[in-house]
Length: 128
Image (cartoon, rainbow, N blue to C red):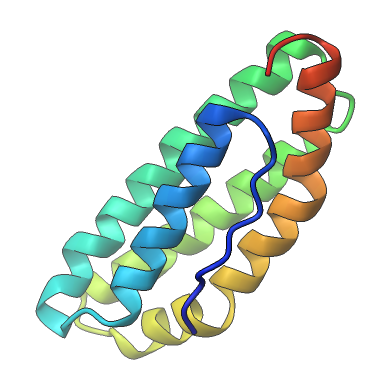
């Protein structure tokens, strides 16, 4: 499943991270098995960096839903690390299915709900 349209939320750093995330997911969808481990590691690092950025913004702005939002970040990072361990052991099938069937839908829902609420809050705080 290729993702061509990306909902922009109006926060440059967050939108740029989201764009990179989508581009990387799309690259991984069509990569070879030899490229998968390296690209998946890039995805994991990008997610960690992005979530750290959002977690910091939530903390400094006093975002009311930050515990729920941070727990979603932690849950997703746990899933990504689990699939990375599988890839490292040679099991690429489950990771590819996750990247195709679960991650894009999770990310879109996360973006439209928790991230959009965060960006609206940051705009109110003049932190956009």
